[in-house]
Length: 403
Image (cartoon, rainbow, N blue to C red; front, side, top):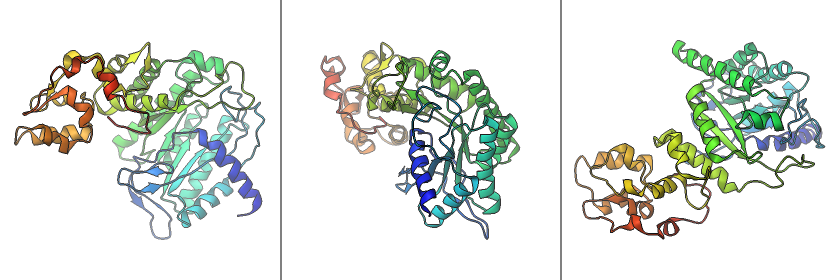
């Protein structure tokens, strides 16, 4: 790799780090045909671990960090004093192919600042994906960040070559978008999401290829005064209306020469973590937005306990529940019991009455679950009435817990 290309890669890989929505999960499994290149496994995420323990990665870059827009929260905004660079289409293709051959990556995540016009930029992104697919027979994963202001026809073309498409919502409310990114149109963003969702659904029904891994979006957390409750309600509406595969919550990072309307520091990283947990509750634990709102205090999720535990502490009258009798929906609300543990409990109790030791073998979260459940040989003695129960169950912040 020559020095000029290496310099561009340094700048444009660093500029892409603020986009969190780079998961590669959900792509169909496939292998390259004879003379082709690459494959997908159906799961993965940038520089992280898949559920089966594999560490995989995507080449995550911007086509360019030049941008016509001047969004206050963006380090690549028009008025920002940062080093600029721009890849050609052939340079991105070459990097992807050569990195794949060296086993550095398993796919490509490509986004871009807006240059010349939304349509021109979208055309360049599509050319990268089309060249990889048609000229090189590339069968690896491709995620394209699409531009809502671009022609619907171009977004249709993008879905023919990409596994996943995404459009960043950016901010949770129209008022915040008008204040911090007045050149962007919230209605246009959601219209584009709707059109994309319709095309993905139609393609599935017609059994043809169009963004088979679906669409996702990203919301910035902490750049405005939006509460966690408003973020979660916005997310629930997006999942319901547009069939999104995933919403990513990205903690705002202070940027050089920032406008005075922006916060001077980032929100606690634990806030981003709690939002992901609340999102998980709605997607996998049958919680409604109102349920999650019921776990907040003045609209904000607690930082010392996860949202499921916060909800349980606010609804102590519904506990303890009997692991041998309670329905699946209520077992999912017991702190410490994950989805797989609940399903194992439901299956196991068909054959025998479960004791506390049996539950312990099915979940690693028994410490949190004990005050909220009854087993054949165990019933808590007013543990749910203890004033210090929250303090006893709260844990020091850690990177990830799925209840």
